[in-house]
Image 1: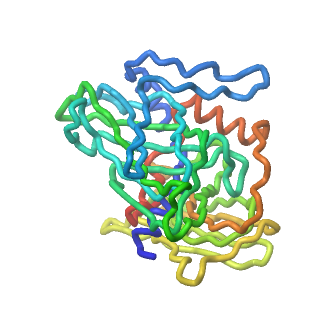
Image 2 (image 1 turned 90 degrees about the vertical axis):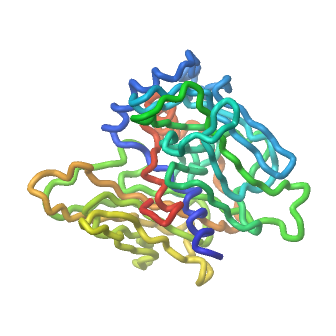
Image 3 (image 1 turned 30 degrees about the vertical axis):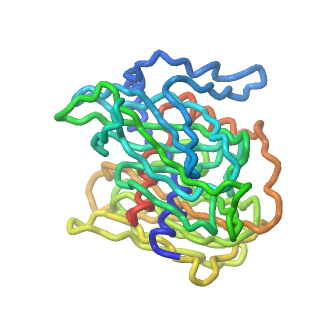
Length: 372
């Protein structure tokens, strides 16, 4: 398994929610989406948010060469305006098999390639499946302008089933020196069909996400001068082996760690890579596959921890975060029954649908070896 494969495995997992400051910045930008498209009623009589239906901002094209293409647009990106977040939309990929990665391009209506800088980020979220360590909707994929293409080998893949729904959360960035009246995001998803898997049937792998602030709510925290840390504990829904791990830290981060509280064993810990100014430039990928992965047990409690040391005399301007994304090769046991009335699931889904503050490019660095 190559380093690029590991990056893709982690990339499938990391989709980090945005900070409150970015949410406020982006809220007005949604109004640029031209589109007058209704996000639907936000809740039914049971209190469960109703997922928006498909509209003409989103379509799925199924190709004959084992590829599904998701197209977002058109979007209008005037010169030098604020970021544009399109309304959350739901699609069905309409295939059965295993997804092996992704690539993307920005194009105009005639298919001509547009600058990659027009994409800020795009996330795919499965509203009908749970995360490994919490009952919120599963984060499937996060991609951004620093990550053009990644793919895992055919022996591994994220399972796709008929009727699987995917929430698409996309943000675009206008350029200071050019305007684009009709831009489209094309996301290409290669897959192996279930009825023609070839010589080796792919093994199911599942992305997972952990945050020191817990599964629901704000993901950044203030960082005053001095040394400070945060942690969160949880229990996985199933047992299995972790194949790869990546982390996300802001500037002044010292380390990030995952440990088995039940046994007292540290499973993974890393320090960030710093640039010439001493600021965080990336976080190393945890190459766990070479020893057959690291075992986790559904009966154990695990803790994600992070530590920062702020050398400034004032709070750090970008605050602090601590997140880990990875991929698990689960045991044969069934995942717990999905509970749509779980308070954490409901709160997370409402945040996703009602507030433009769910997931941004903070989670993307792991795809290209940078900080996730």
